Image: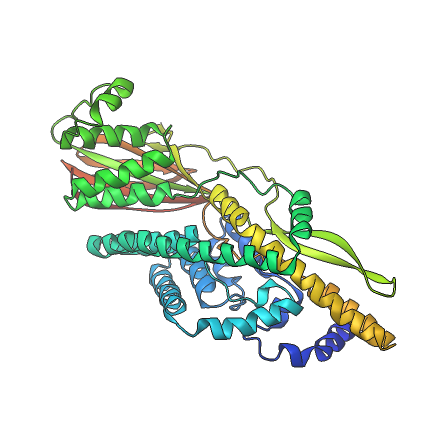
Length: 466
């Protein structure tokens, strides 16, 4: 440990002048990565130890946006609602500031320079599109927990706007990466790395958030806006076309709106919608299960020769998702009857798809970094500086860390369920725990559920008419 510390210290001194301008420089970012720092929190959350997960949160290793989202989500399942709301609001403000700053490219240029000699953790963290959607989804849930429908409606509207802005920004970044590949003439290197990279998931994985769309539809309907509700229900149906609960909802609202273009197709497959018993109410359950996978560390050894015929081995460190089984949960029970919901969103698939989209740009940066680090090493070697050559090799090895920053406290997947019930108090139960669900005639009762390990966090709220 002492020798390793001396090596780290010497390496930092060696390149300190090159890195001193980098705004994101820290020991955590330089010699480790986010998943390692967040491992205790992630494990505690998987086990359903909510308070322990809150206490284990690392001290801001990834900036205000990611830290705020993690704290907001974990505090929410821990039923620390004021803390959750405040954390999400701070993350939201940080996102606004990041998107607003016209000068961000200046400071980001310094971060990119630092990343060229160290690793991608030096680059400012920008949340993925699906993460921005979930940020506003959980702000909406916070408003619903406070029984503020209008605030929740504002957040679901904003979710679509920020995701669209992020999509355009991502497309611009991908084009920039392609130009850099052509400029540096390293397209063959990039292709070779991608060919050996472990499969990170479906190429056509989830890119739309069915959970967000269906929640949005429920809120619009509760507000009496059936047209907007129908639009988002149809979006959810496009994401999860085999979900019978969404299909039934689309059929119901299409019938109410007399959507003559859609009804023949819907009725041919699902039959005509049967009106509920007069005086019943509707229960809609959102069931979040498990915890999304954390990014792992995948290393690819790469030998680079120099002009003298010597060379060194470099380890490309890339983030990836390993193949892990999804935890299964026993059904909830509503009035002692199993609640067999239908999946509306796989967050694991969304995360993997997001990584797949970002991967070419990541590999470009890795290739450029290996070349830059090799130049530093060769410069020391060409001057007969064996100590400098050794230190450069050590520094290159220790600082080559994957960028595993991602929102790691999200659920693994989300199911939905709905049923028309008689007015009165009903009982939702799971694993020996119970929740009273109040059903009113001709109104919707929404139930939010989150399950990890053997623990559950849940609440219900009455919404508008149906």
